[in-house]
Length: 192
Image (cartoon, rainbow, N blue to C red; front, side, top):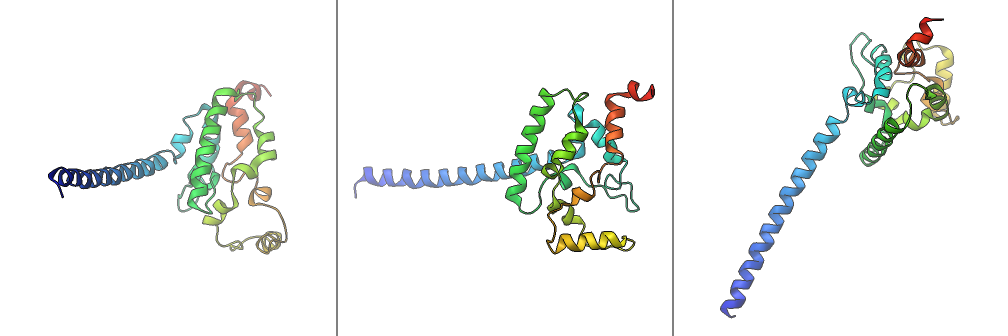
């Protein structure tokens, strides 16, 4: 083997290890940065950066899910408004939802938007059963009315196509649409 081939082989090996090391380092940086980004964009404060979300956060803060419960535990927006069936679906939906929310924030007039109509039509698209079931394991807690037991039984046995938000439409946000109306139209409501 010639000296030239030996030098070339040395540089190829060195280049391989340099590329491999750089790739590993870049992967670690991307994973850590991605994790930090996912965490940073998962709080109610982040979601409230959009003006349109302020009354939703206010209604959430006044609810059981916003911390008004004996333990003071609060769910975050992503706990209910992203699917929790698998991590890939969670990340893809988070990216799609964030992009959609940002575009809507730039293009709609929040004060004249039909929030109640949108929720009635599409609540299944932005509140996930997998999210509800992640925390609510016991579907027949103490004190649940008999009708609730029957409804949850049908749900668990898949005898119905209803989703959690079909029976619990404003769950997570106390007096949601009144809060939205008061926020966007305070003068109109005070004149009534």
